[in-house]
Length: 449
Image (cartoon, rainbow, N blue to C red):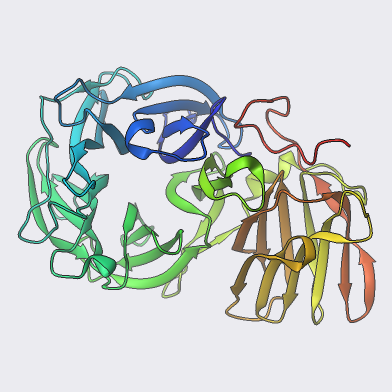
C-alpha cells in the first residue's frame, strides 16, 4: 500500500513491467535520519517486485556508485531503464563531486544488463555518455543535469532523452527546464536547446514521457518549489508543448506512469514522512505511494482518480474506528469530517477534513492547518483515505490533496454540516505487510498510555 525497504526510505524510482505481467521497482534509498545528506546516502538503488503494484517484496540492492575517481563516485541518483535487444539499458544520474560552492556536479551515465529483472548491471565505459552543454545550460554552480528519461524518437529510428537541467538564459530561481538529447545507439548523444523552459520554475525534476492513445505525448514534471507535479501535452515530441497545470498535489512527487494489471494506465509517486514521526518534524524522504488512475481527456487537463485496483484491499463497511480506512462523504454546504480525536479527550477533534464549496483543507489538533487547496469547482462528494499518518483526499473522484498527521487516536468518523452531525461508514484498509516494525513501517498510531 505504501512501500519502503526495511529500515530505509525511498526517493525517486523507476518501474519495469515484465512480459509475465509482474513489476520491478528500482529506487533511490537511504536511512531515516534527521539530516538527509543526498550526496552520501543516495549511493545505491534498492529493488522490489510486485504482481499488483500494491504489495511490494524487497529484493535488496541492485546498483551502486562507482569506484573512487570515477564520474559517479559520489552518488547515483534517478535512473530510467528501457528494453534493448534481449536485455536492458539504464541511463542514470551520476555525481562526481562538488563545485567550489558546494553544488553537485552531475552527468548521465549508461549501464547495461543481459537480464530484464533490474539486476546484473555493468557500466558502459568509464565516463558519462552525455553532459550539460554550456551553450544552453548551466554547467557549474547551480547546474542541473539529472533524472534522465528515454523513449523511442517519433521522428527517427533513434532515441530521445529528457534531462532535468538549468536554463543558462534565465535566472537561477526560475531556470528549471527540461533539456533533451537525441541518439541512435544510447551511447552517443547530441544535446539540443531546452524542450520546455517555463520561466517560473526553480527546479524541474523527474521528467516523464508517456505516449497517448491518439499518438500525442504527455509530459509530467516535478516542481521543486511546490513539491508536486504538473502536466504538459504535445502532438509530437518536439512540440509545441501546452502546459496543463498541476496533476498531483503538494506532497505527491516523482511520478512514473505504468500499465496496471487491469490494463489501465496508472501513476505511482513518492510521498514524504516527517522527521521523528511528529507533526512538527521537517519533511524527509519517504515511501512509494499506491497507484492512481491517469485520465487524459481530449482537449482537457489530465487528472488522477481513484484506482479500482485498490478495492480488493478494502473490507466491509463499518462504523468502527480503524486506523487505515477509506470513507465517502456527500457534501451539502460546509462539512467537517472528524477522523481522529485526542488521545486524552475523545470529544476533541485531532484530525479533520473540511470542505466549504471550493475550499478544501485538512487540520490537526487545535485546528492547526496541515494542508489546503482551492478546487476548480465546488465538490459534491469527498473520498478520504488514511494509511497510518498518510491522508489522501479525492474530490468528486479526483486526487486533490495529501498530507501527514501523527496526532490523535482513531475514532468513528463523523461529518458535521448544516444539518447536524452524522456518522460516516468506512471500509477498513488491509495492509499488504502489517507486521513490519522497522523504521520504514507504516505508523501504527499513538503509543498506548
